Amino acid sequence: MYERTRHGLNRSRSRTRIAVISAFALLAGALSATTAGAAAAPAAPAAAPGCENVNTSTVTNNTPVRIPLDPGASSGLTTSTIQVNNAGSVLYDVDLFTNITHTFSGDLEMTLMSPSGTVVTITTRNAGGANDVFAGTTWDDDADPGNPVPYPGAPINIVTDHSYTTGVPVTTLVPEEALSAFSGENPNGTWTLTINDAAGGDTGDLNSWKLTFITQEAQESHTAEPRMVDTPNLAITDLTPVTSSMTVSNAGSKISNVEAILQIQHTKNDDLDISLTSPEGTTVTLTTDNGSGNGNFTGTTFSDQADPGSQVPYTTPPPVNIVTDHTFTNNVAAERLVPEEAMGAFRGENPNGTWTLRIVDDNPTENGTLNAWALDITTSVCDNEVSGLKVRSNKKLKSKKFFIVRVQVGEPAEIRVVGKAKGRKGGYRKFKNMTKAAKPGRYVTFKIRLSKKQTKSTRKSKGKAKVFVRVTDSYGNVKKIKRTYRYYR
Image (cartoon, rainbow, N blue to C red; front, side, top):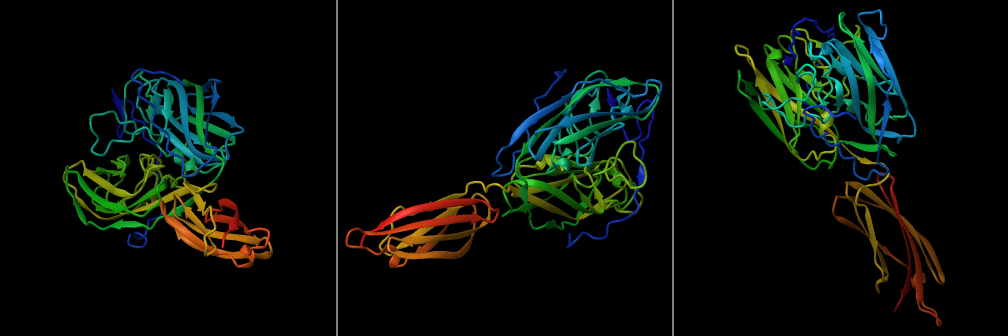
């Protein structure tokens, strides 16, 4: 068995690290291959409410490329591209599949770049001397949904924490940096996979790779929920898990992004293993044994978007803001870091309920305190429709000549009603803008009184009114009503 350590394995090959140059102030506001041991693929996150034209597509490059590209070199860069056309215009989720054979997988540093120029690190110097462990691997933010710290005996499918067996490909892994950093971009264009063989003596091949997309035709409308803050002032004791919980309520029903802000004082931050668990039970590892000395997490925001541009081989400046690749300095707080496991694993879940932060100090003699922590949660709905938007109106005109419109929504929205009415004998008029706030699952009612002219009877016929109503929500979605009424005196 090969197991990654912070100091390498067999042939010690340290990671390239860059010094951090700025400190965070205070917590703002108070804070397709089958392999042995294959597991079922994790489910893709649910699209935001109301999303139409949600599609899944896969694009593959089957052209083999040597690693390194120059056959005469013992190390160096290899690149391969995939051209995406005719996909949906908004990327919701993407998974990467690699078939890479290499005699020392721990030599490999790999990134994926989108057509928009965002770069996500897939792996850097993981797996030690194990060979061919990425020969059939799906890289997915959702690959390890249930392992809180301290890790149980079950396999850990996070690339930096997995125990590798030489010659046994790993079916699914969470990449070193979150693929959710691509969310919201247009996936059409050229995607580039870059592989750096960072040490000499071993070679391999990129045999094939593919991208699987979930796309939609409309952007999402995002709502930044109020920051949730807890100040437990909780002692972090050696070798004993400690937890702190907070309850989220009255938020939207679908998560699009989560950021966690930690205010921890500890004399040896690389002793700390920290995980976050959502109300639905999904657990994301923020960090395990990263840091250097004191004060590295005193006001640190863990965000999937913290490092959009670092390309292998890493150069300086700027610093690499991925927690497993960042160079920490004693008594200097890291301002923003990509967590060890993707926050994108929470995407599509309902944020309402109890969130739990769990901290383990896995080494004796040093201690510290969780002074405070906070969550910044963003929820979303699609711009093209609010889920569950329903509009009703009365089928008969009541004696008081009221036209009644009832509106129900699936997400919080402001409803605006406009319209016009026209009687048989004239009496044309427009309704003024009428607005009301609507809560999910509840009807809001608009009463529109028609004039006598609009319902006036004649000798030959009963009174008659034609009513046209336009109902618009705050996301720009429209429902129309057209009714013709006969009025009985």
